[in-house]
Length: 351
Ligand code: SAM
Ligand code: SF4
Image (cartoon, rainbow, N blue to C red):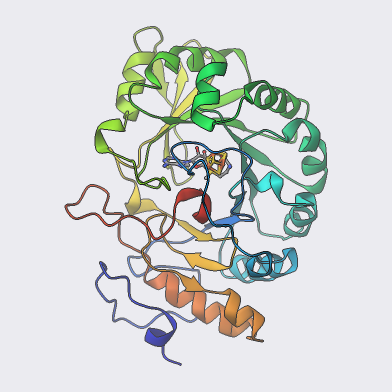
């Protein structure tokens, strides 16, 4: 099979004609080194955040179509062998998948992995945190869009703020779990009034609070540019009360990081819409059903499950991965005329 038969060309990207490298570190056609893999373990979720999922009616993947932990382990080994150093488990809600610590244990023993982390809505953390850490989890991001219970209920369609706060407190008991990050999606006319309360949370607790700009990845297709509250706007609100100082970070930064000038706490801004960071993007994604994506906004995917289940050896799968990575999108097109939404919504891709 030729590469072109294996991978449909991204409709908006130019064909890259140079040969796909067959050895060496995992690199795309624009010279970006790829080190960061996000693995979605399920498309299901116990919340229904308005900016992510519809209230009802989303069609779930069949169980048989979802990669087993053994399949994820095998693919991860291949990715790690060719240069992936950081793994984040996500979903849907990863904690609704049974026995998640079993997967974490399998991944945590992989040498040359420098980071094993989880993104969760936090609902089940109080019960599960100990097992996750014992299995080898190193870092955690908990999504919490507002510290106000009524607003939380409105945006997640679940009255679950107390459980999420308890889950965060549970994380504090495990010094091995560091850093603890709290991520809030920033939406205009919703998030502004919470900004200072979140800043105070970041000062009072050992949590790094980060705001993520609302992206056009909602299943309802309701996203409008005017709803994007930018990181710069949030920063300006914080600076009405506190002085912020940029912090340096030698890792490829998706977040702009700041500490409070008096040394108490840190906040961050992830601004994919107002200040895209595609040029340094080192991320790739594997969906729960084994589809490989090279951009959150990809309009094409590469099936890794089919070769995996039809007996392909590791070298063959590596070749498919390298060829797909080679065609990683130069950038997302959210700010371009005629932007085409991604082929799936956030919970189906794995945020
Ligand atoms: N369920 C877990 C959670 O909520 O943390 C993991 C999956 S969720 C899809 C991953 C992250 O994507 C969350 O922080 C969520 O807030 C974010 N997210 C979902 N839809 C988004 C959107 N349309 N724009 C920006 N961020 C979004
Ligand atoms: Fe579920 Fe996370 Fe999407 Fe909210 S953002 S609906 S918690 S997958």
